[in-house]
Length: 582
Image (cartoon, rainbow, N blue to C red; front, side):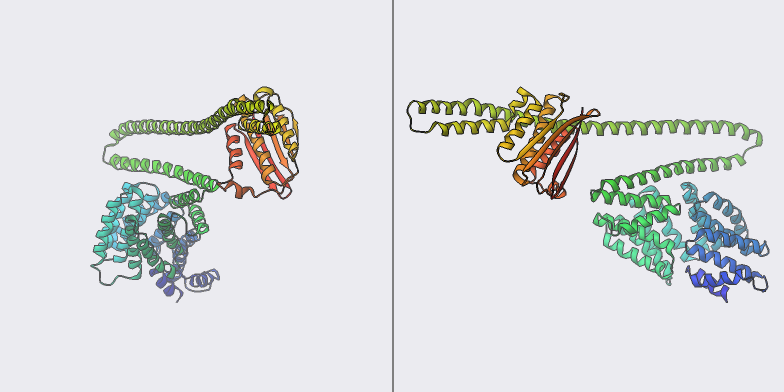
């Protein structure tokens, strides 16, 4: 009873955890029953069901138990248990073990003309070659599998194989036109079958989804991938469902430029990675990287980019191994056709040539990679320097323009006002103090536009003078300065402007009654601290406010002098800290 039910759900590609539990309990209790073929098949059914549940390591143990209890008494059970063992090795990323098993039992299946089973073996071996990135060998096996499934009139396995081939072939070659044509021919062929099953429809929905995705018809692609997934949900097949969920994520992101459920995508990426499915994990980390870029989350973007590159490197190494594997396989085939004496000479010659070519190719690839990496790094550095110079020059030009305006105001307007003053002294009725006030105001404007005092008396005295003027107009401002002229005049000007802007913001917006400026030299760098006892502000909100010109000006000026800046503001006051390299 247990075997019949287990075999039934397995033949329908379904998983029933309750059936597995009862079967395992029955076998573990070691009831005194006849250890016949049916008893051995219970181990096989358990292994099969565990594999469907994506519990591959457990499935391997139960497949080995099947072989142990069978002990070659039943040849059919033996080769099917070995086939399942090979499948599990594929899923646990051990393709070489799988190929070794498949190669042995393919010979047996060929002798018995069991075309359906032979097609399954060819398909499984093709998958193992895919994992080794031996794509030429894989394609040969896919074609053999298709031939044998058609010969066995197993349309379900045939269409399952062809849909897998379409997906894998596009993943390898990225040839949209070729893939769409192949899918169209497959859909046309599918129409000729009168009674396709649920699994057939699920597979066809899957390739329809791929076709619509390649043609940028996202809604249709999402519709068909969901229809394909319905079967795997119904059959509780989490392994294949996860592949469909991954593809659905790719379709959704391609349409909306964002992930539907980032946490689910992260979980899938980690699960694929845990199952050694590096290509799928790499694709998902690429989606997470692109999503983080769109969200302007630099930290996440860098993290997922590193993950993607790490997996790409691993894939590249696997590709190289796959090429070596195919070269070696071809070499071994040719080797058998020659006499032993000729083989020895040919082995040495060809191996030397192959190794030399691979070594040369590796050197060229490595050199090219290092060259472009270094070139790219230099370009990034150069661009950063250009940007910094541009910003600095822009601010310098602004200061030069302010200097010119200040000079004109001082030399022309002030001169005219002095003449008026002299005229008034000679008998006019206008008060001299009024004109003197105008002159003082013009001088203040000139001083704000370009602090000439900075050039005359230096940075330290200029800061002290600024603090005194602010104290005179109502903001009690003190300063502590230990400065030994470590900066250039141009950088001193930018630093002075930062202090001036910070104190002006305090005066205008901070509602403070006291402020302090501290400038000291520590460990080859200048440390500036400007603080007040005002009511503070929301730093994040103001940084994102395009009207906060004063704050943006401080940040830009800090950037031009390569300073690290930190702004902390609460309802007890604001503190601006700068660290300037000298």
